[in-house]
Image (cartoon, rainbow, N blue to C red):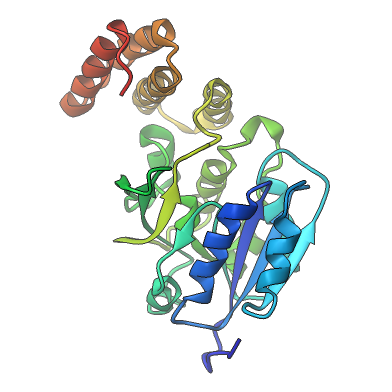
Length: 294
């Protein structure tokens, strides 16, 4: 692979576990990048499928490192391993079932040096191959905004400076934070830097099939995360944060067809001060009461 003359080197960290077929799509999207000065570090969490064969097939197409370790059960440790092995001034996160559009890294170049962390929207795709919507980010300038209103930084869109990672430290490997360790990290980032930039454009795609965050366990993890930081919030902020959390809990229960639990959580979310979100909670309450999944 030919290197771009620019001195900026990106390190792309890809944790993976038994996603060989999807990893092919992910890596192909990197071959197609218009900006070429990057390394790819695939961090295998103990896969038992054909992942190593996929890596072999791309060795001549990408500047590729392959790290394989015993299964941890989540992406935090593989990502930390990848960061440790990386050399770039900027680290980019990409899940192995997601992919980028060809100008992703080229677009990031314009912001390098001005911001510590850059992120953007991601288009959502499912098994049908059809566009299912957009995961919208939002500009966040203070860590309380994440606690009160939820995470607005899509993980597979993030480019973060090595200097900031060194300041914040490694991603938490607390097993109680699996699938929300990224949210925890953005909170920690925002406690030391407000030089974050949201780019309101889809520069990649998010695969929604088999998403580990849609499970009953995710509810206890979100509660655990809130408990970790709730002392940082005022009484009024905590009230709104708790109501928003109840809405997110209700949506998870609703999606996995635990309708009775969804009804109770939607009821508690009806205390949300926003008319728009109160309406969404009411619609969800009706849907789960009638056993309608949406």
